[in-house]
Image (cartoon, rainbow, N blue to C red; front, top):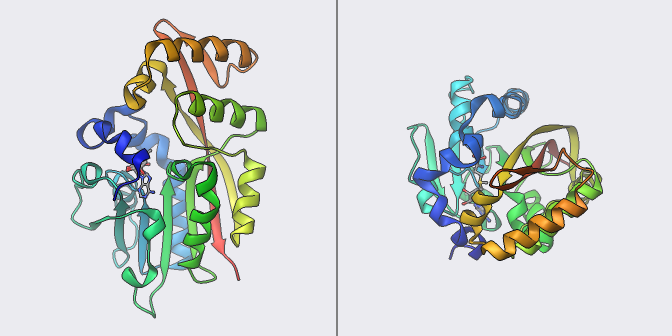
Length: 261
Ligand SMILES: C[S@@+](CC[C@H](N)C(=O)[O-])C[C@H]1O[C@@H](n2cnc3c(N)ncnc32)[C@H](O)[C@@H]1O
């Protein structure tokens, strides 16, 4: 069964995905620092398999191939959406239908093999109650010393996280984004050591795109805009008025994590 939050946005999966948000999710330039840090981690830990959790169309794994990831590493794109997986373009990448919460190490690697996990822009789908159990589940599937490199929704400060979480709430979208101290704490609690972390370019979410993606009614959108004008008046880094409404910047951070005992 597909999560209702994934099913709700299935209409923009597949063919339309690459063009979403000014093609953020298919832009190699915007992904390059994340891709580079994955390549460096894979070089150090030499995994048997890299699984991209919620890997969408397989774009990040394709970038790893283009960047010369070692040829003996198996690449798996795990996603809940059939439409996203159907866009798979590279013969080296194995699509696997499934939810993060259902990942089983034993279904991916043999006892003697090693696993590396990557994940871009997916943990927010866990919502406020999902991120802790999802991280705990992922850590349970890993052995100490294995790596989990992810680019996740994460703001620099608490005010920005709150503004974004209220925006999701007003759109009736059960996604949730913490600020960086909270994320660090969640990862530590789940027994991940954060070896490195750095911000990534945000994705600009225009209000008309949000309306289509989440089916937000015009009057709700007008109220959201009025509220954001007030609450984010001093945050041009987050919120901008545009001729057709507004744009809100969804912030990202890369966390390079090692599973610890
Ligand atoms: C914002 S997109 C990111 C796609 C890809 N990671 C990228 O950066 O290009 C989120 C993806 O996560 C998938 N997804 C969301 N929740 C998921 C879950 N619980 N398990 C597996 N996939 C999930 C969606 O189907 C979607 O393809």
